[in-house]
Image 1 (cartoon, rainbow, N blue to C red):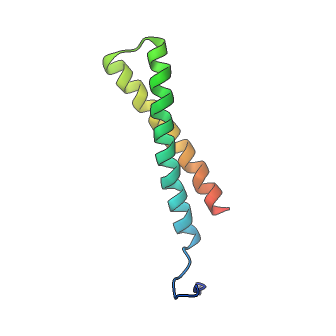
Image 2 (cartoon, rainbow, N blue to C red):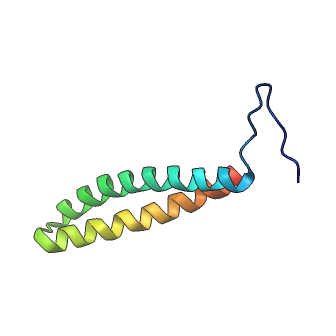
Length: 77
């Protein structure tokens, strides 16, 4: 399949490349949001030490994958 060339010879990114970029952007935003909200909610519940770190890690991974998936789908559309 031919790729359209821009005015200065650059090619446009493919749909897959756009989806990869959306997934990475979503993962980074989701990781930051998970760290922020996970820390706040865990401290409110009174967690400390290993329990706190494990729960924050789990919250970060859940929001990371969820937001990354939705951003990849949005960039594909």
